[in-house]
Image (cartoon, rainbow, N blue to C red; front, side, top):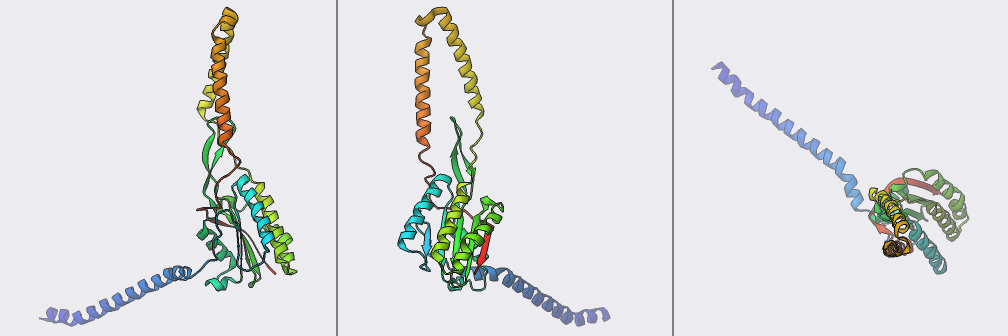
Length: 288
């Protein structure tokens, strides 16, 4: 009877402890949800300026550029995109606070904006010299030049393909070409000078061609064998041999392949500015 009464007396105590443990677990789960979920909820409230159309390159919501300057910049940036597959996007806004990001640094906002717009292409197709040297290579190089004029801050955000190799150069561009003009109130001049320097940086990038395929060397060996065969045929039968006709056909085929190869290259990169690229966090920030 004593053991039965002890158990009966303990049941309310155990139940109370279980209830306390359950409540504590719920509080922990709720705390973790808020801790992990609040950044996503906050990010969902962030807005972005209007994304420029393909190959337009500029969103000037702060009205810092004249129509003439905008057209000049678009032509320049179009050439950079065609030659190097590196889009340079210029975005001017009043304040990042106007877009729900008032508690955020311009570095973070620029990175999120870059990813949201998908600046650049993760891969590009490269054609090397010779036949068969065409394949997609990792690229992901783009540049965002963001100006928040009311915040008195600017940011150069680079695609992940740059890594951190251009950070020092971007800091020089920001401090030497952009900020001094912004401090003087010459925003148009600062944007033009900064864009010119960024274009020069982009044009210095090299897209490595893919290696020659193994069958390329087989073609070279085959060509040597055919050359020897032709020489033997000419020595034995002279010009009456059929080697002349054979080589006429081979040279005609080679000319057609080379002609098609050069034509297939076109005049450079034909893609747009937005291809799902993402930021690598590199670049530079300046204020005035």
